Length: 158
Image 1 (cartoon, rainbow, N blue to C red):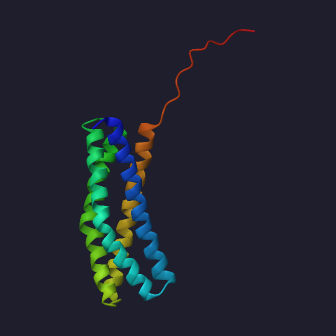
Image 2 (tube, rainbow, N blue to C red; image 1 turned 30 degrees about the vertical axis):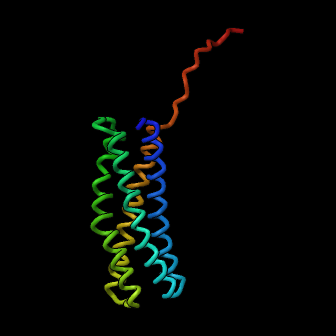
Image 3 (cartoon, one colour; image 1 turned 60 degrees about the horizontal axis):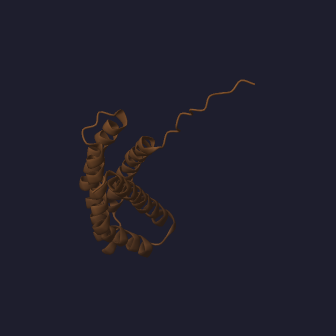
C-alpha cells in the first residue's frame, strides 16, 4: 500500500477514534446529569456494542501510525509514539472493561456505588485518552502541513 493511502487511513481512523471517544464521553455526561435511567441503560448498551467496531478502528490507527512513523527520530513522531502505549493500556485495561461492566450493571438496573465509581474512573480515563489523542492529532497535523514554497521571484527595485 502506498504511503499516501496509509496516511489517509491513519488520519481518518484517528479522527474517527477521537470523535467516537468524545461521543461516548459526552453522551455519558449528558445522560447521567439530565436524562432518565432508561436512557442511561440505552447509552451504556450502545457504547458496549459500539466497541465491536471501535476496537478495530483503534488497531488501524495504531498500525498505520507505526507504519508511517517507523523508527523516525523526529521529535513529534517520537512524542506520538511515546503517548500510544498509555492510550492503548488505558483503553484495554480501563475503558473497554468499564464500558462492559457499566452496560451489565445498567441493564440490571444496578445503579449502586460500584456503578458510579466505575463511571467516574471511565470518565477520567476517557478524558486522559482524549487529551493524549488530541495531542497526537495536533502533532500529526503539524507533520503533514504543507509548507509554503520559497518564492524565487526577486524584488525589483523601483
